[in-house]
Length: 188
Image 1 (cartoon, rainbow, N blue to C red):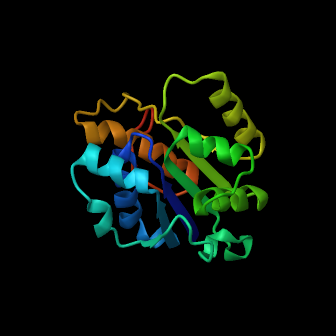
Image 2: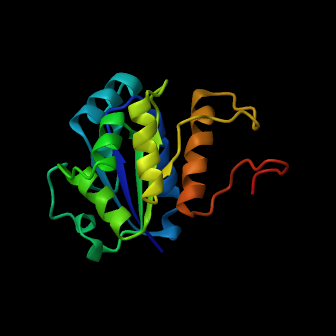
């Protein structure tokens, strides 16, 4: 059973976070715990992009950015997966340089030091050399950089379907079993 931390930062791409939370809720039999940390900027971006505050309706446990007593702030909490979606370049840079100034960066530090799964869904484009080097640093430390780059093999017809191609890839990377488009096959 997975114990998952979902961190939502203030980068554009709230649709990815919303779809991930919705899909995780539908996969309840595959995880033991899902905890969510959301930045204040992420809340503002969510309202701007999605036109609502539906993150407040989420049934998962939310933690403040400054809650260093959260169970996943320590390796003994045994959370095995952290997904940062979307992952701002500021957050990525702090993680790459070991700056654990809030719960998101502390949890990412814990996941990396415990050799567990960190998935950073970066959305910014283009990348500058600092971004690329920070991505390299996190990759060398064992993290996974998963750019929010949709695929079109499945011929998605809505913006949600396009965004779901990214979220499904993230769920695959997290090791969850999902029904999705597979190259050369119909959905599972």
